Image (cartoon, rainbow, N blue to C red; front, top):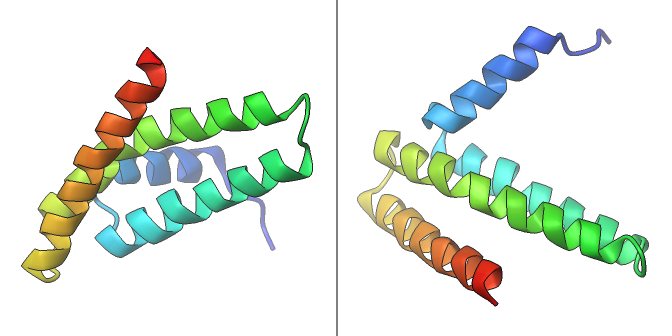
Length: 102
């Protein structure tokens, strides 16, 4: 198995940011799975590392608002999935803002 080349990682990141990944992959793979892994990391290293895990979760959540929204715009799937994804990103935006304010 060859290591991932730097350009491939950048390309994947750009495709994600531009909403060129499928809505399902963006939401379930890049958002939900990463959040679950970060929460696991925070739980395993509770104590000193918990604030770091919380900060990483906040940063990743704030970042993923744009890719999920754009993936919904570009999706060929059911209209209801697009609407639900946009409602979800609206709620994520509120959660991030409230977290930063309080």
